[in-house]
Length: 134
Image 1 (cartoon, one colour):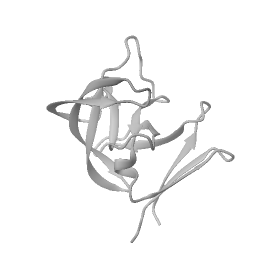
Image 2 (tube, helix red, strand yellow):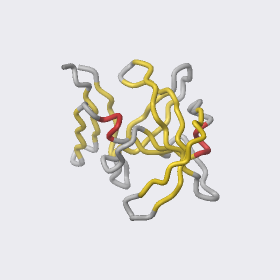
Image 3 (cartoon, one colour):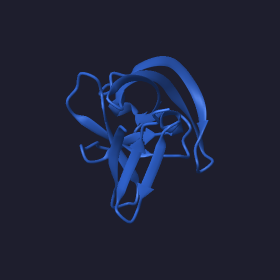
Image 4 (cartoon, rainbow, N blue to C red):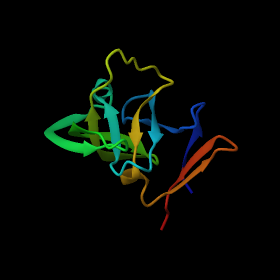
């Protein structure tokens, strides 16, 4: 069974790393079961992911009940060893926000998690996404 292994960080966030086809470096995302899209990233990272904007603005409601207009794009990631085209919601980064290699650049949502098994073990600080082989 194929797995994507991550960790629970110091702020108790489930984190996994993903990569872009043709690029060696990886990027971190927070696994967010409250986000029903596939991937949400900051605009500063959109070029890093070779994300192409569809030029479609969509109003999205966040957990805090606030809403914003986000751009919808299309990108490609490596998912369980295969190239996977994904819908990417692009949000404006906070002013002064700098992205470092050890900081998550966005959210991975249930649009990618389903139909896989997600295990977040806070005791061992381990995150596992298991591929559904059915």
